[in-house]
Image (cartoon, rainbow, N blue to C red; front, side):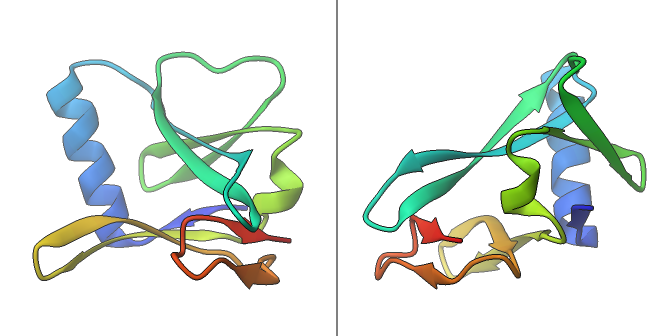
Length: 106
């Protein structure tokens, strides 16, 4: 299960409305960085047979089944700190993060 904070839900709903289409967001991982993996977040118009779909207050969170083991029980938040804002991932599966915070290891 992947969950969203109220701030993340609100931001995603606003973005989908502004975009004018989409069923939710896709969350995944890619190989990159000094620790090995980085999160990928994108809007989704359709899901596939290989996707697992989670719901959070009307927002669909879509995960390819092969990425699910890396993301199970993760929470996504949307935060603002000074001039910076963006999504933050709280993942209990992370064993380590790189110094810059861009990649992680499970």
